Amino acid sequence: MKVTIIGTGYVGLVSGVCLAAKGHQVTCVDIRQDIVSCLNAGNPHIYEAGLSELLTQVIESGDFEATTDLTTALDRVDTIIVAVGTPSDGGVIDLSYVRTAVRKIGEYLKNNDRYISIIIKSTVIAGTTDTVVREEIETASGKYHPAFGLGMNPEFLREGEAIDDFMNPDRIVLGYEDPETLERLEALYAPWHVDKVRVNTRTAELIKYANNSLLATQISAANEIANFAAALGNIDIMDVINGVSLDRRWNPILRDGTRLNPAILNYLIPGCGFGGSCFPKDIQALHSQGQELGLTMDITKAVLNVNDVQPLQVANIINSHIKELSNYKILILGLAFKPGTDDVRESASLKIIDSLLKQGATIFAHDPIAATNFSNAMGTEARKITITSEWRHHINDTDIIVIVTKWPEYIDLENINLSGKIIFDTRRMLSIEKVTGAQYFAIGLRQS
Ligand SMILES: NC(=O)c1ccc[n+]([C@@H]2O[C@H](COP(=O)([O-])OP(=O)(O)OC[C@H]3O[C@@H](n4cnc5c(N)ncnc54)[C@H](O)[C@@H]3O)[C@@H](O)[C@H]2O)c1
Ligand SMILES: O=c1ccn([C@@H]2O[C@H](COP(=O)(O)OP(=O)(O)O[C@H]3O[C@H](CO)[C@@H](O)[C@H](O)[C@H]3O)[C@@H](O)[C@H]2O)c(=O)[nH]1
Image (cartoon, rainbow, N blue to C red):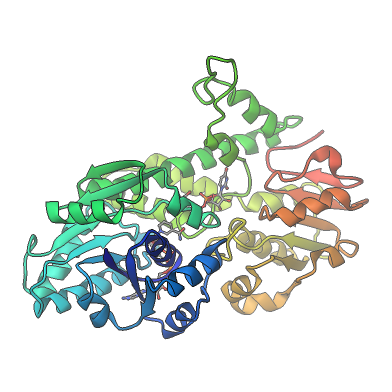
């Protein structure tokens, strides 16, 4: 099947190469010529494990091409996927990229009588595809749905595991407003044999938000209890979480007496808050849409409130031992919002470094792949910190080491003599007993 994808970021590019690897002929469109040139040369502009190899493979098989030429890309296909960004504009979803992309499709349809299905993959608030998207296309084309098709196929990939998530999804949600579009979605995902959920587009949209919101709610709830444990003292929140997770409703006991160990139990680790390109903006968008509907959205608001201040726990906990940080050298390990990605959007490191700089600390910072993106995100403030590619060289020279991103290489800290230092493990990466000589700090742990 031939398919065009508009927007070639984390989602559009990963979807494009994976659909091509499954045998579809994919054209990816982006407005940025630099991205398109890199992709056609086989070089992804983002980091994802396995992406580079898969891109080379699908270019060589002739199943993948990138272009800035939307018209030619539309000439080739009857199915278009829209995967442009939907950032937050002061807490409200910014649909301008989606509007622009679908308006251009509408302008194309004005002079073209083929039946084209437009499928939104971008995360958009419930009711967007069957109102905003439909109206943009109708206004620009002068044609009315169902003269064209409308679908919504939310994406659930996690950065760092994006290829594997796309190739082996938990389920595929096929949102549709007309039977022809459902047929095309079925054909597109025919190579995948997993649970498929067939619903209208606004249900598909809300499945995406509910999924992210319920995960984020659990993170904030766990973080609040972690802060409680630390405030009371002499409790390690990990012992509490372990105790709770033996409830059979969290972790069922199988007939042979073993446990099911659901993935959520490895996922949920109290720390310095959720970041990334999705949770913060999506939870904000859900909150503001709920308020527009006249709802108070109290839980959603609380999830955001807890998360906003959670990175500041790092400075707070350090300050409970050291009041004045201006003579201290601090090494921040990890700048990406999570391991396996170079994405720094809403990374906890941004807030942690900002709070420590305000106290006059000297900051060294390391990330194996996200340092350049982080520097760009900090802007002129980046001049106030030293970004290093050799974190081990700075150990002797620093007083406090803060692990913010769980990059596997930082486990080496268990084998390094850290005498006299503070190690702050915000991701519970290290075994406390293996940290030699250092004072071990973590969220949800205050040893008396
Ligand atoms: N990043 C993730 O892990 C993830 C996972 C699931 C869903 N999503 C959702 O998918 C959407 C895309 O996210 P992303 O992280 O891939 O975004 P991104 O910012 O990485 O990529 C968006 C791309 O769209 C391009 N673009 C913008 N307007 C365009 C236009 N009119 N024509 C062609 N290209 C255009 C941009 O140049 C950019 O390359 C968002 O709605 C996001 O919420 C993201
Ligand atoms: O107990 C936890 C678990 C996660 N996080 C943080 O939560 C954020 C999100 O993590 P994760 O879900 O692994 O990464 P994303 O790549 O942002 O993926 C989420 O957002 C995507 C975009 O919507 C969805 O597609 C995925 O299903 C959803 O997991 C990261 O900052 C994590 O460090 C915590 O702070 N504590």
